[in-house]
Length: 101
Image 1: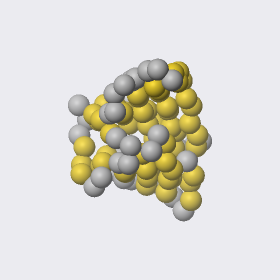
Image 2: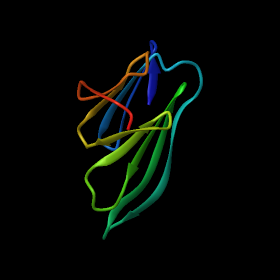
Image 3: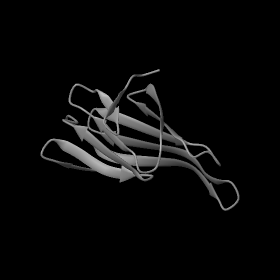
Image 4: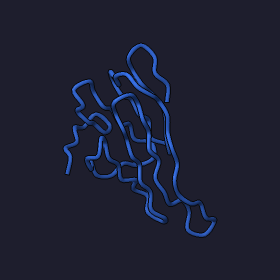
């Protein structure tokens, strides 16, 4: 992730991420999990962009990646999708608003 002119952007696991006005604080990510030639990848990537924390969770043999923003579940996302978090923390995937579940 990079933070330029008040916008944090990056690509993680094939998902494009944009966070408007991430606020002060650190930028970074942390991986926890395993990779297997038999079952694939299983784990969690935690991305920090200022005051926003995004968690991507992947289970082996399942294409859908589940995700959370600031501890709230927002369902699934796939490789090639675009995740946007606006300054008011509205979450959209491919331009469609998502509500926390």
